Amino acid sequence: MLKEICGSYGVDKSVNFEVKTMTKRFSLALLTLFALCLLGVAQTVTVDVVDQSTVKCPVRLSGKIDLTESEADGEDRTSYVNHISATNLSNVPIVAMISFNQIGNSLGLLVGENNQLDAFFAHDLEIAPGQTYTHEHQDNGVFSTPVSKEAVRVAPAASSQVVFVQFADGSTCGDRNDGGVISLMDTRADVLLALKNLDDASKKGEGEFLKALAVKSKDRTKNAESVLDSIRDRQKKKGTSYTIDYTRNMLAVAASR
Image (cartoon, rainbow, N blue to C red; front, side):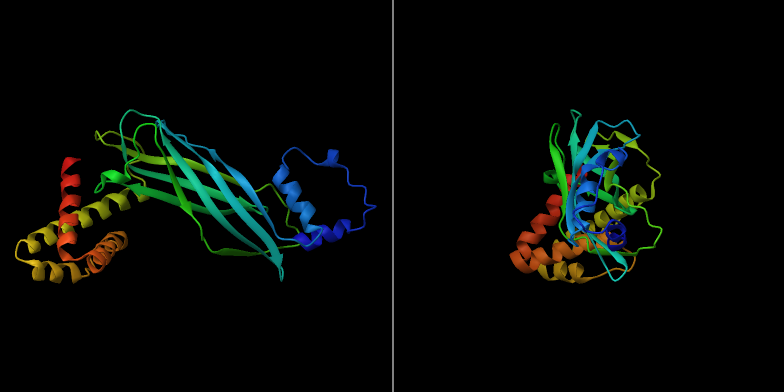
C-alpha cells in the first residue's frame, strides 16, 4: 500500500535513498510510481505488451497499456486503457483471431481477458497480409483490491498470446478446442441461421422482414443477439431496404468462406 510504503521512508529530503540497492526487476515504471507515492499522487504508467505466444502462428502481438493506480481507504484502485495490436505476417488475410491478455499492476496480476475478432461476415474486418489491427478499449472500469500490510510492490506488466487464428483459405493455427473458439463458432452458427431467416422473410416483403428482425431468441448466444441488435440499429437509422441489402451482403461474404 502506497501510504505505508511511503511512510516507511518518510518524506524528509534527507533520506539517503540509494538506487543501487534496488534489484533489476523494479522497472522505471515502478520507480516512478514509488517516487510519486511519496507525494501522495496517483500515477499513470505506460507498459509495453510482451508477446508470450507459444503457438506457431504468423502473427505478431504488441502494444501498450496505460495503467493508472492509486490508493484510498486501504484499497488499491486501478484503471487501464489498452492498445493491443496484431500484425498479420502471412500472405493470407486473417478472418478470425482470439488472443489472451494479462495485465498486472504493482500488486501483481490484475486481470486476464480474451480479445476476439471475427470477420466471417464482413471483408472489411479482415486483417490483410502485412496489416496491423489494433484493439482499443478506453473504459475498462476501476478495479479495487484490499491492500494488506504484507503487500510487496512489483513492476506493472502486460502480456498477450495468440490462442487461435483462422485464415481466409480455411487454414488455422492454435487451439480449436479452446472455450473462446467454441463460443466464436457457436455465435457464427447462430448468426448465420438468423440471417437466413431474415433473408427468407425479406422475400415475402418488408413487413415480414421487420417481424423476423424483431424476434429475440433465447436460443441464440449472447454475442449472436448482439449482432442482431446492431442490425436492428441499422434498420432504425438507415431504413429497411438498406438493412435487407446489408444482411444479404453478410450472407454473401459467409458463402465465400
